[in-house]
Image (tube, rainbow, N blue to C red):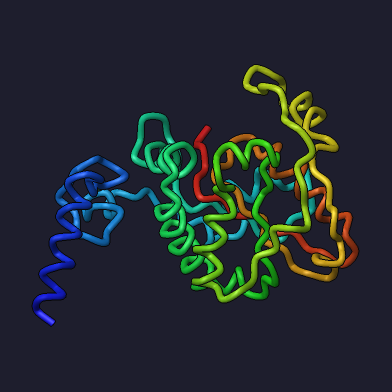
Length: 236
Ligand SMILES: [Zn+2]
C-alpha cells in the first residue's frame, strides 16, 4: 500500500515537473494536487447571484426581444480580470476541466433556486463544426457537462446546428448584428426538443445577439420554452 502511494507521488512529482500544476486564475503553483483554482481565486469569483432574482439585468436584456422564461449569468466579466483569464483558459487553452468545474458550480447555483425548477434539457450553443473541430471541443458543451452533473438533467447537443462562420461583428450596430445572425442556426432534429423546457447555455453574454438568434430557432419547435444561462456577463 505504502509502496503504491510512493509510486503515485513519484508519478505526480514527475507530471508536476513537466506539466506544472498552476491556478488557472492567477498562475500560482501554491495549489492542491487536484485543484484547478487557488483558494484566493475561488474567493475572488465575482458572483452575480442573478439566478436568485427574476428581472435581473441579464433577463431584462432579452425582454421584448425574444420570449424567455428565465435568464441568468453566473459571473461578472470585465477586461483584464480573473473571469477573463478563466474564459481564456476555457476557450483557447484547452482547459476543459476548468469549464466542467465552473459549469458544475453554475448548475449547483441554478439547482438551489426555486426560480429555475422544471428545466427538461440543456442545449449548448453550437459552434460552427469547422471551428469546433479546430478547437477540439465546444466550450458551451463542456459547461453543460458540469451543469448536467449538478442538476441531474440531460444534454441535447444534436438538435441545433450552426450553419456558417459569421463575419467579425465588433463594429456593427446591434440591429445589423441581429440581421447578420438571422438564419445562422438551424434546428435539425426538432423531435429532440419538442414540448421541452430548454436551458440554452453559452460562455459569455455581451449583446445577447447570438444567443437570441439561436433561441428564436429553438422556439420554432412546438411546445418549447426558452431559458438562458451563461457563465459570464459583460457589464456595460
Ligand atoms: Zn489563483
